[in-house]
Image (cartoon, rainbow, N blue to C red):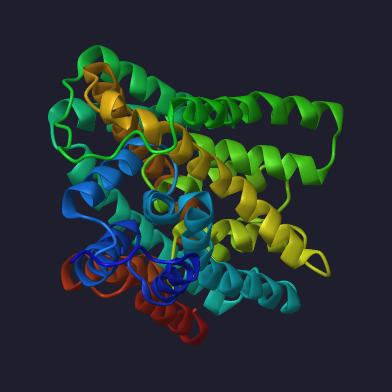
Length: 394
């Protein structure tokens, strides 16, 4: 006898538990989701889950958050999807908002040893992400060449628009030059109807056009944050680590945060469970620290996650048709290779150039990278160890 469909409360509580315990990044999250939703609770079948994962990896945005949203959506509609999303996102968002207040309370921490330790940890974590993503997304010469070439181009042309242009260029090269990948064989699709999906897609693209125009007409930080965070959430492929360089351009270049504040928050993000995109909560709170900090965190979170959720709602009805298009598969492979190049360029500048300013920093980063790569030490433990070592030694 099949299990009963979960209630909205069931979905929220299951996601909340996962949000409190899911360390290890998006790939690990998908494993936790499979164990919880498919094996233990049987809220989805194996093929249904596999095809939902394939869709969310095809789309820009945080794949694990999109999968969690999709699980709730397919069981209890939009309200169930939102319950799953909020449950999974809430714990890390609260922790990172609190961290932003803590950093602000300490005042000028630019030369603090623990902060330098967090910056060193960021070097190790991003380096390990580059290696892993290169292995998975650039397994052949063609995609490796796309990643390396675009990384070099980004280092030569470090403009605010260059990262989005690199991803678009990678997609174009993939569409023209790469072979399509294989598609999954599940049965996700036709959820919500084609007309409903079209409305969500119109909203997705409409906001991409409307928000920059509104920002020009009504200058101010509130709309500017909405525009910047929505654009990042809408255009980033490759998951949580890939959002780092795009957000760095958007919040550091205008002077909203310093590199030190940015990298401190990124390091802290590695030490909390849940989706890496909740880094936006830290940024929103740090930009608006004070009475408006919690509102700023919520505002930034809303806009960075909104495009990912809207895309799931918009593409789910069409997924069976989209996933078999060779051109779409080839473009995605090129875009994913470009993401690796974007992350590699960000690893060099500003992460390594800012985080490694002495030989001890280099030794700590190398040891941390080796620990992540060869001993499978959890990233959160590495972050805490680097912060402690920085406070004692740097």
